[in-house]
Length: 226
Image (cartoon, rainbow, N blue to C red):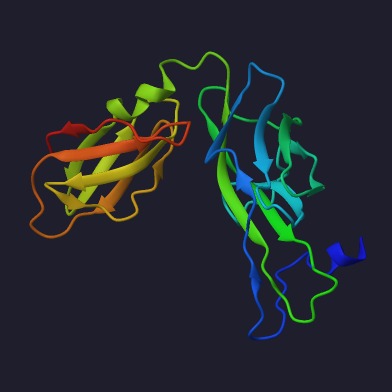
């Protein structure tokens, strides 16, 4: 374990040394935890032919300033992933009071820490943290998550574009534009909520948008007059 302890953080070696990339492949860009199932999971694989990695994983609240207990545990939280191997991280609900009329979102962190080469003199080792969304989906929500983006209601309020999400599902934008002018980093709109973005002066025309589905793909385009 001594060599692992040397790289539990971001470790820098001497200038001019070679580097070890992330290497580890996470089997998805998001995880949906269906409350009707006992657990959710995501695979982690190491395609490197020689180097093992230490994998450390944990779940955060959606806001950095939220210090409340996260109502999930992830196993295994820390393990060695040898070259050419794959493992599955399992996420289990562990209490907590979450809304039952809408989805909740958390951050799943998967950090890959490369092993040191004990025979090398100079090394630059970089640990990479992959951060993806974990959606908790209660039972019996009305509607279909894959169609939620189609029901967004857009309006103009002063110099802002406003969207209302009447569904119990999160909608993550892959693209959002008005009259052909892109809205930069549109992000995500929460269930049963309203969100606004500033519009460039003189913007007019239809709203066009695409969403990211729960498999990480992009939806067909939807449009609406403004």
